[in-house]
Length: 281
View 1 (cartoon, rainbow, N blue to C red):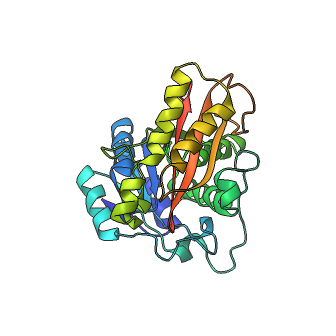
View 2 (cartoon, rainbow, N blue to C red; view 1 turned 90 degrees about the vertical axis):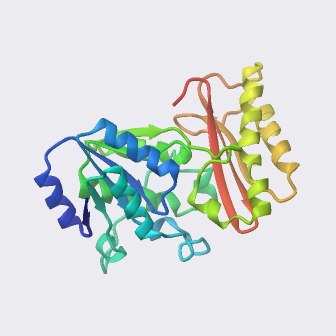
């Protein structure tokens, strides 16, 4: 497994390996959610790469950039054991050199939800994903469905800028009790960890209501709010029932495919999750 630390090194490696290539972009501190994407990349391509980069431009001034969990040695060991061919591991200065001033903004689908709570987040995501795709030049890039809005922002980015890459979505990987795997789960106290299962339970309530024929979007939102509100350690940031492609909030009846999503705080820890109602997106 080769480790590349600059865009020039990464592109040189790619030129030397003109085969079908999959990329799994990560911010490190790898868990089974990441590894499931890596395994799919390995299965579907002749070569597979991963990137590890904690992207500062997607963190706001009061967010957790400095304490974001990191384990570079453990990450590289896991990727090597899986058989990944190359890891793009740039320093911040390699991605954003001195004087950097160019950013990518995706309108529409980045507004609201995470975009409303974290105003700079998706500008940073769109910028770094564009730079990663330019450096690695994969045929396919693998992202998880847990970050539902991010997935849709990236799909729109690739479509609008005519980027020659297929965006592949992997299913959310969950703990045995239903909590979606996330690097930020490491921040939770034991009491918060036990309470955090309320996210998946609330989403399962929405799925159950939908299966029972409930189509009113506010009724679905209310069911999620009620379940989260019953958990004393949980502070609801938002709950959304939105069009699965545009992420426009649905008022009235759900007529097509919808994404139900929520963000919940447990002290200083903020977790997100989502499910799709109707055919999968």
